[in-house]
Image (tube, rainbow, N blue to C red; front, side):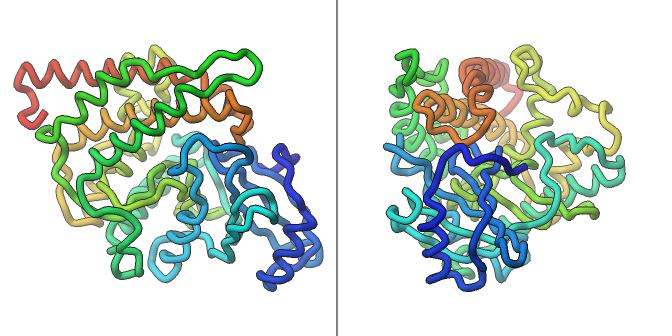
Amino acid sequence: MAGPIRQPINIANLERYIQNNVPEIKTPLDVKQFGYGQSNPTYLLTSTPNGSKYVMRKKPPGTLLSKTAHQVDREYRIIYALEPTNVPVPRALCLCEDDSIVGTAFYIMSFLPGRIYEDPALPGVSAEDRRAMWKSAVETLGKFHSVKPADVGMQGFGRASNFYNRQLKTFATISAAQAKAVDVESGVPVGNVPHYLEMTKFFGQEATQPKDRSTFVHGDYKIDNMVFHPTEPYVIGILDWEMATIGHPLSDVTNLLMPFTTASSPKARSVGRANPAFVAGATPGLPTKDECTAWYEAVVAWKVLETDMTWADAFGIFRGSVIMQGIAARFALRQASSEKAGDYAAQMKPFGEMGWDFIQELMRKMEGGEKARL
């Protein structure tokens, strides 16, 4: 999955830094860049003397759209804090905040040899393994949410309440900056997410929000941010911790289960945001959304209310539209690190339309009294 370097770095500087600060890594290095990673450029470092592999994550080059994004120091801190727990993470080796080394701040972690699947339907595995791998992904999330931040010295990693309103406030700042980004070639600005104001007004009604809970949250917990064992059906590592904080656990649950949610939505199917493999009965071994929820509940020992899940599903779609707007903005500025950034950027507007359609359906349920808390 690693190939030519698309965003050059000063390898000689990096090698000197490693020689002085990370003696475990033997230089010289062979450096390649991974194709994935929408936000922070990610590199594979291979020690030429012994073949050992490591991964470096760095902030993107240039003027950044938001001070709250690309915080590689937060990624390093949470991975380092989780190492002694039963949550599978890479080993954190170093954090460098000196921009003079490779242009921006970076950290290095261990490389996990295993399987990464872009398709959450997990193609190419047996039905039995597919079910076991999804169960492992769900239970791993439950283990993560069960770690108390204070127990690993991370009580100050985020605020412990009012998560969804804080998210809305953050999105307001980030989305405004992203909308103003102008394509360096065409001169056309990215623009607003469709129905952004209407959606933020809807979600800002505190009386409809899920019961407030506070745990660690990953921020982008999904199948393609996990490494599975090379041959066995379980998770050996969680990747991409850029958006980790303390917040509401349902934000991670709904993000993981989004393929099930969108597969049941006609609007999602019409805009190409539904994976047909997740239509009920389409893929042998694939669990149902209800089964995944039950596995999660068994680990965290609290009940997920249907009304709370429905609201959080809608918020997850809204959040996804802002994330895609961010990819579109980075693509416009040619700061996007993924080879597929252009494809994702094109999905911003249809995804926003899908979010608004989903909210309208929820409002119809509200008016019809189908969901007491919605």
